Length: 209
Figure 1 (cartoon, rainbow, N blue to C red):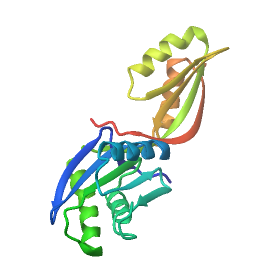
Figure 2 (figure 1 turned 180 degrees about the vertical axis):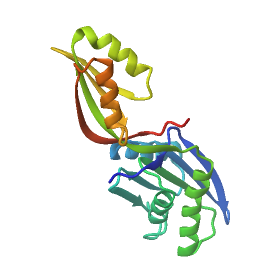
Figure 3 (figure 1 turned 90 degrees about the horizontal axis):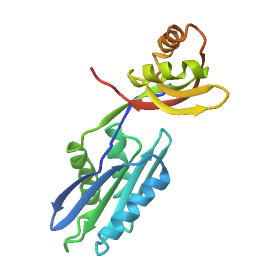
């Protein structure tokens, strides 16, 4: 069963210093691997004179990747991934840019420095909690479309797409535990004329209050 997770909706940056080396960590939301890699490339371009650009990203429930970028194997990317996963984050990318200060840190020192760079930056972030949901398709006749759309826009349910054809179809993200109640609400709104089908599992931002 899908579980809630944390993510970001803005870039967060924090700099720390360890034995004269500067560690600049930047975190960003990443909906997929390509977006994560683009962010890593952008950080490389921004700090082109830095010694290393170590990175980590966690996408969905299965993709976890770390890159040591020339640091000794396992001393940068792995602790960065562990920091993200340990805090419950997904769909996020981290890049730690290092400006070498002339003092070797050793393997243990590097693991601590890169892991801490990420956790200290996460401490300054405002996480978004994502909760399991289903994409529900609602198909109605054109004469009911305006009423249904107004009702949906005024509700807490997120409308992902509206398609006009022989009927009007709405793709709506509904909390995993609310699908039955949503179907009943749509049925009441349309006098039972709507066709409602639950589809793919997704995650949506948790709505508080």
